[in-house]
Length: 253
Image (cartoon, rainbow, N blue to C red; front, side, top):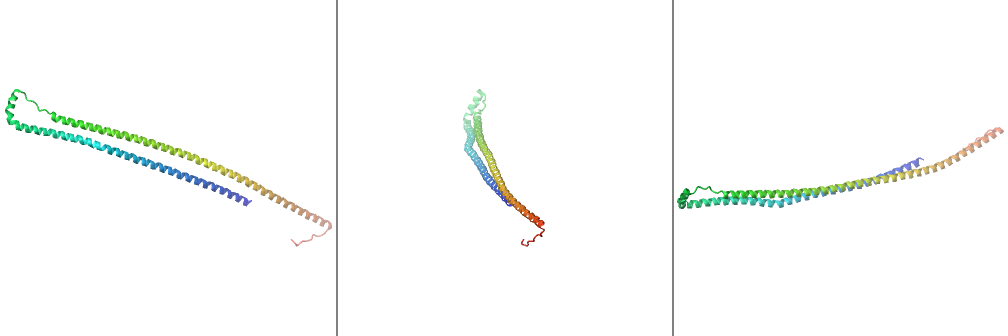
């Protein structure tokens, strides 16, 4: 009986060890797959961020020469305008100094007949106005370029967020599916283990019943043999009492 119980306990422990070993292997493989998926998602995100930064730099480098050219054109225009105005003033002063002796008398005569006129400043005002207009147009163009860059940046960020939200949803769906699959696998193994346990218990009960039947038969035979021997002894003792004989001692046992 003790040997049968120990053997059934060993079989039960063996089945449990096999079950836990299979479950550990299954969860280890699932853990490795989850780590690989997370690493792939992180690498994809880093690559997308690097591409985004590179595109920003390229767009900025493309827009920088245009801004510099426009700024340079406005500054060159202002310098040319100032040089033109200063050269004109010097030229007018030289001509006035040369023509002054010859026309002094004529100017004196004309001054008496005509009122004095104020010098015109249109030559000095026009370049300043053109420089202001160029600066305004340059700032407007710069603002337009910055607006385009901002709109492009926002569009790229929206695309990146949409893509990564989709990836996160896929990872979440994969996680839920794997959890359900793992739970089903565990339940299936548990049911298999319960079935094996019930079968082993049934086998054990049948075997115990057989052992008990054999042992019961042996016990019955021993009891029957004991009773027959006791009846023989009682019969001999009765005969001895009737005949008045002493019992013979047997030293064979």
